[in-house]
Amino acid sequence: MLMSTKVGARIALPGGARIALFGGTFDPLHMGHIELIQNVYDELLPDRFIVIPSGCSYMKESMGREITPAPHRLKMLEAGFAGLDLPIEISSVEIGREGPSYSIDTVKYFISEMQSGAILPGDIYFLCGSDVLFGIDKWHRADELLGMIILTVIPRGTDDISEIHRRKAYLEEKFAARIIISNFRGRDISSSYIRDDILGCGELIPAGTYEYIIKNHLYGL
Image (cartoon, rainbow, N blue to C red; front, side, top):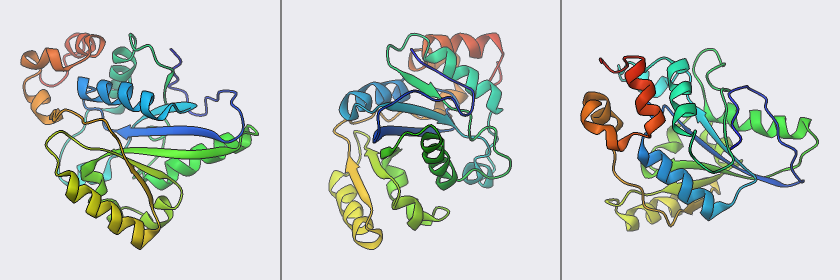
């Protein structure tokens, strides 16, 4: 398995490389994330699949939620992916960024990184849950962001798919956005529920991540 916590790690790829970007707080990494990665990787078959833990999550912090320090979240990802037989990279690009971290800057970073290595960027699949689909037009420089990515929406099993398609059509018309709806249906796993009951939610957390949490007495342990 290929992983990197070093900003700027590069892989030799052919021109027009397809990359999938999957960002989040991962506080903590759980089996819903693992299942999503495995299934969407098989669906997209990207040249690079890059998991990006957030640094300063301005949206969540503005709501008053305290986020586990980034170094711990990074280590939890590394530990949880240890047994995953896929060429996944972990990028610390947002962790190393001062101040609020915006998705537009992250996408531009990877485009620039690939170009500097004489690699022609191809499609950029920006993975997100259905909740993002209904709020992304409020994001920082949303029109520019939507012009650079293929928004790849992963619904949860309880989502109203017809409402998702209506929202998709709206964004496509307003922003000329490129949006695809994954065939995979994620489980409705609440990170906040896991944080509140770590000992009772061991089956929802990858083994390596769970061991790291216990060893480092995270989430009030």
